[in-house]
Length: 253
Image (tube, rainbow, N blue to C red; front, side, top):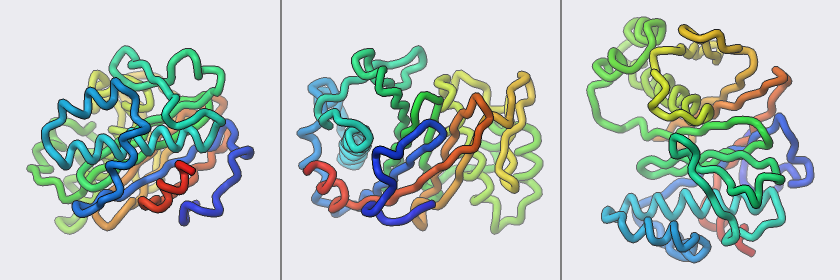
């Protein structure tokens, strides 16, 4: 399900087994970003001051502001009041003070786009990638993909290879973020299929049926993937929203 920000599912209907993913496009001439730095924590502002590149600064503000506003949209906590801890591998989580809310989230940002995904109780990961990123895709695939993914990538037509590469890469990034291990988890230990969308575990006896995934174009240049654990193997609903700065400003009121 996707659409404009307004007229979305009421907050009171937010339940376990439902995930929301919001994406926000950042254009070079955007003037709406700086107003949102005020809701960042002192620690976040201190980290921001250490970021030298202007584009990276804008992405940082946008990603963290989006996360705070989104968490507040699904709770009664003010955006500036959220506090976070880092997990064993650096994944941000809500501090103990907010754990009773049951909210789980993950954020991602790349050139020109930020994304945040939120669910209740279960593990979730999101990744957004700019498909125009340069690089020798075949070499990266050979080093990072699992054997089934490498074979599928190599069999794709020249016109489709970039799309296939970033589909696999974005899905794999979202999965390792969902399990909280980041690149500590070997990327060749599991394989994604694209049609139908699913995962196969090659080294461990994971239960593929207890994961749900979504893959979609967040813009003409960006691809976004969601990985959501569902321990009871129950149905999952993933709801997408594409925001602009007007929508962000409305969330602060």
